[in-house]
Image (cartoon, rainbow, N blue to C red; front, side):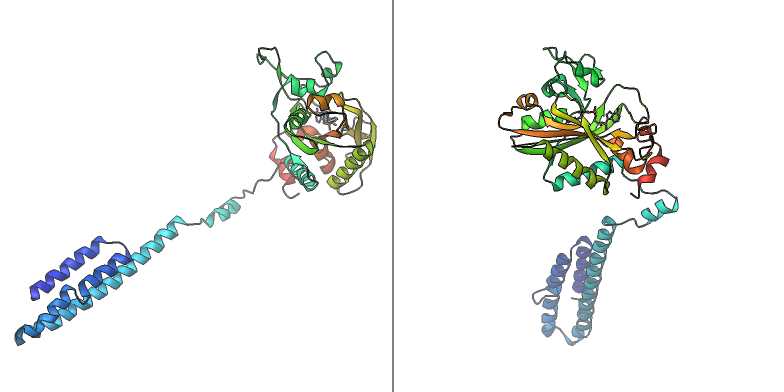
Length: 353
Ligand code: FA5
């Protein structure tokens, strides 16, 4: 019987070593120590044992019972600690990371001032119920020119020097280009929506032109279009002034003058008093004291027709804001070429704005 107890204990230990869940450990313990378990059986048989056998068997059975209990508690604790360690390892947060960045003097990045101003303007328009559209940088002649009332023989095509993509003609002979303005998104917007609607479309545009303090060949515009019923020039002008005061958060001096764009009639140039020189004259405003910023106008009926909209029923206005020049006015930047110079000393100045 004593030998049987030792064998049972060994068997228990071996099985305990192979199991890894607390439930299995508790089951094993009750299997060995339970009322119907092998150790209870042995203890129950004590009444038939001799006095000599009882002398050794009783204490031995109790000792093994205690050892099984102790091993069970230890194994349960081990399983619990393992689980906690595994969790800690998988959810580890490297708190030294931030410190090491600081220690080595590296700082956080920030948004480019054009991105910041674009996001700010998007928020203004979203609060006024406008949608935001995106359009492709590579366009066809239809979207960039024809649908905007600029047929191929129209002299207005020369107003925007175009990067044409060689070998991109369709079988019908239609050429492709890098969009020269965001106005092509007007066409996508009209074809995809039923009036009334209002949206803006910010993005990069490309022109094959010589750069100077206020001209880049890759720059950013923010197009806007509102189509509804009985929209007037008064609505347009009020809207443009409100927009500029929201952007500058102060009264800025603007002037409105007639402007020619084939896709609007009447069309206007909205200039802002140059904030670099306060109107005295500088290289940004070409010594005239005013900067062209926000051309706009009432959408031409031919443009509405190209967008499948009946001009007898609907009308509206459109505008094309020059984002780079807006950033220059806002922060007093005296040369547009700084904006895309990639110079960290320049862009890092805007992190805290
Ligand atoms: C246009 O591109 C028209 N599509 C805008 C428009 C839309 C008019 C809807 C009417 C209705 P323009 O070529 O003037 O217009 O450019 C618009 C603005 O983009 C300018 O006022 C100016 O702020 C900016 N801009 C134009 N050319 C450059 C350039 N080379 N570098 C930086 N900004 C420029």
